[in-house]
Image (cartoon, rainbow, N blue to C red; front, side, top):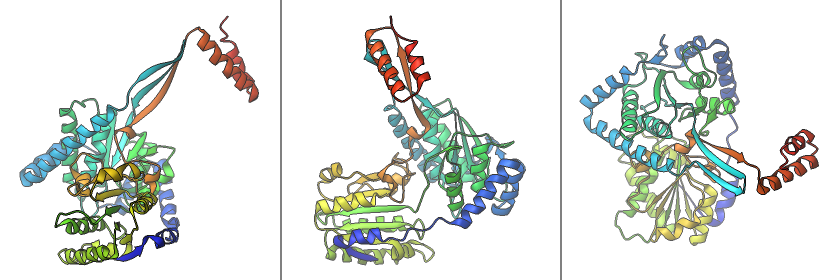
Length: 445
């Protein structure tokens, strides 16, 4: 793992090689999008036969399959079932609390001039959940539940078909649990539909609509580079959450925590992030070179306990980074520059750090606040901005499924007349005479 001093950081950061956009991937995805737009279900099935484990004739999945998946999971893995239920309930409660912050209102700016805000759920949304080495049933919860809590009318779940023509049973079970959790918490208005469709063809089908899949307004969820390219190319036809890059974490340590296993925790959290895939980025801000070396030793010790198939070692060797900072201000500047997906504070007096930290997807405060809890069960959403994009956006939340619209209500008054006259003057100055006429006709006499 690379160790650098903070004075080296900015030149290191500036010289990081940015990967060029994969032209071959984009060309392939453009062809998929065009084919799905022109041929609908036929193209979807052809691409499924080429890329997925099966190509089902019927793309929509009966909701009874969700209950069957749940029954199977309950019987075979009751502990996992209970864990998904607990996580679903926490995600639902947190999403509903977030929704409380979005209010309808009207505000009288001047007498007779009332401006307002209305919060309206998106009508149709889709959650895409891939199924590679492992079924990402946690992503089912993180996508479906905020949409249900927002009050989206129709929520689509799309996931690739397995050999039996259905999405993974655990994904179906998680969808059933998510829907039940939403209903138990009072969110009863959403219709759920499920489709056995994967890859870029799923994104294209949901963006344009086919014989089987409806056209949606917004798509969220993770995916491979083809899914990411499809979302990027189709943005505008549909709304998207964001383009996901490699997952990353930055831990700030001050070396002052008195708990004996603090270094073990820091090393474990870096390894946990590196475990995602070989491109994941685990980084640490350390108070001294001695502390950095001790962390490296602990990481090496814990890596030896993982199976050889784990990508964590490769990831840490390739992307792992420890930066030795000079003081608190130095550490804060670097953290805000990196703008990590996950930011973790392993320091004394955490609350004195928080006001100065501006750029992160989620903040994990203190020794017990493992980033893994945010990934799964605490209630936070794990779909977060990567590759430094937390500089300008937050993670997926109930707010992504809500539209903030504005209203204007006017009545004859001196306040209205002043505002009307100002609009007329501005329109005339910009040469938009029809605009000026439209306001002039409303003169209060």
